[in-house]
Image (cartoon, rainbow, N blue to C red; front, side):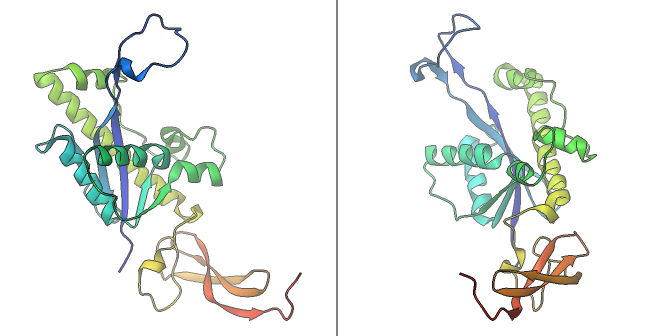
Amino acid sequence: MTARIAILDIERQSGIADGIWELRQNGWLNPSQVIDRPRTICFAHKWLGEETVEFHAEWDKHGAKGMVKKAHKVLDEADFVIGWNSKRFDIPHLRTEMIVHGLPPYSPAKDIDLMVQAKRHFKFLSNRMNEVAKVLDQKGKAATGGNDLWRKLRNAKGDELREARNTMAEYNRRDVELTEELYLLMRPWLSGINLPAYGNSDGPVCPACESTSIQYRGLARTTTRSYRRFQCTACGKWGRTNASTSSTSQVPL
């Protein structure tokens, strides 16, 4: 058995509210002013190691509930979910749609939020995905033409609406591809991933990419024990053996 790693991204549509009197209006809108609530309109995902990026939207054959049920199935199968700002955005919004549509909780998966990891391990000038991609010399996100795309998705008809939906599908899929590219670049630095726990390897393997191409380099020492330390020659991740090589004769107070 190996871990199932889903790479996922959602897209949302803004809501509509009544009662705006001026652009500099102070205070919050009252819920009674909401005419159309914001909602998740589509999502894309792929499985790490597979080529296909799947796209599902509320305008598909089975509608919004069918889209949400598909997202539920993906999360239910995943051991890890890779996203950008997924802990605060994608996953909570998907859970909201799931409870609205009467779906039960999916089996627990570990959320590896690359934006959280970027803030923890690096100091980029901006933690926006597209800006990090530029710094790391990646192609970046697909163009949308700005907020006009979301207006067309709400108001357009006929060919214009079909074109807008195709553009959104391309944009959503590209976000998933870019998330995977950034994940692979950041992978040796990330915390919270231990893939050998999901496999049946006989000896030490890389905790990040499961490669058996490792090189032992010194010892990793805790307060009371020492372990053989290694670095993966495939991705660069550091790890250590499970069994200790020695222990101290005294335990400090």
